Length: 196
Image (cartoon, rainbow, N blue to C red):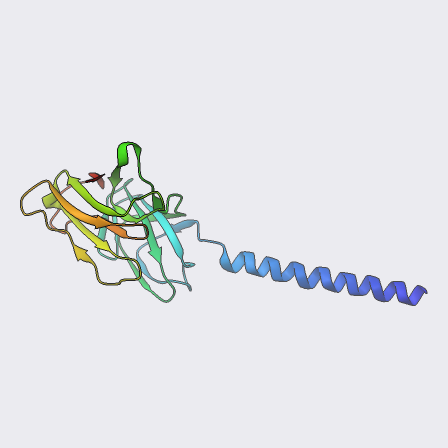
């Protein structure tokens, strides 16, 4: 009887160790990175865990994959994919935190306002249809729309106007970036989407 209890106790300890270590290993390997990186080249899934991050330039201005981020400014929803190369240049540092708002949701009166450069995915609240895209300083922004599952974007052309019409639906991605010849020191934008 005593031997049987010892065997059961040893078996229980073994199960606790086995299950506990598996859960801990899974937590550590899948936990999103929350830290600071400096100039250099990084590999997604190796140096930085895959995921979607909000980036803030701290201690100077930097660029990531050619996108300038002035000091204390943000780039929202940057995806880090497995085995992708991420290049950071400049004399500053980037603080990376997991993105909190992965999906844009339709605002009041079916209007949505975007205030910062970044990558945006349209959530479930967006009605499929044609949208009027109003952009302040449209000549200084680079805007693209990706349909779900597509790696080829549709470039948005404003033809010297401040608005244009685009088709959107749940899952579409909108990329709003500053142009390469931009002389602005911030990443604030004023982009408004309204259903037609």
